[in-house]
Length: 371
Image 1: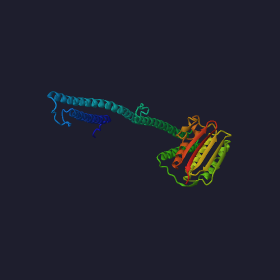
Image 2: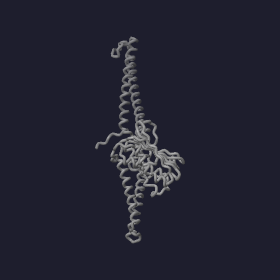
Image 3: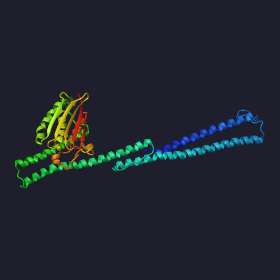
Image 4: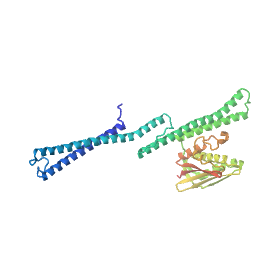
């Protein structure tokens, strides 16, 4: 493959062409102007005709030689000025070309290091506005790739941890039964089955996330009354909330129809209510609201409690993220519920967000376009 010319060589050749052309044209115009003006001056003095091509009958030989010597000196001065101007233009062009090429080369090297996995590399600031914007974009790309790599490693470790817990429990139970340490009765088998189900749920959740990320999540859309669905799902959590001495209430407009997968929307509501009930202390409140607006349906699930710290709020929808690391995974869920909920809402063309006042309440909201 033929090697492409460098940016520096292209810029330098462009400056050379401009410098030579400008100097040549300037010298030619200066020479013609001086020759014509000098001829006119001699004509007015009666020493020659008014045209530069006319003879010099009124001049002595010495005067004629002096005139031609003057014109020759003007010509050489013009040529010398042309050469000096072209040289200075080339020097300035070389400096400008290097000024442009140097940050481009630094960005190219930074891109190469990013491709090799060095996400800490940054492009230093540059003076040119366009290149400065490009350098900022390169640095933002490096930060985004670094965060993505960190999340990938964290997610891999979290997935391994989540899978290892139920597998270890199942393996320990089966080995205990095999060795006669654990009796193979119904109670112990139920424990093994529960861990197997937990493992199955985690695999299903990871599969849903994978399909949602790829935009291939299947949705069986029907006409759904979101208000009625909110009331039904909230009612299913009534006993759980009462057992924890939590007041659970719902305010939902009936007739808030959207085109959606009813089972997926129910999953979103169950995830939000599970999260709200889990983080509400005894004596607290959880309330669900659903309101139809001109262009969409707004659903809110709020609860009183410790709230979410401002530094944690931007990350609550990330995989396996927990605002309280002390919460055991056995009681705190897989850490995928909010992530899945957000992906499911986005798959329906909506959006989800969270708001929190530390020490007061937390509200998870989402909107769905009306059908």
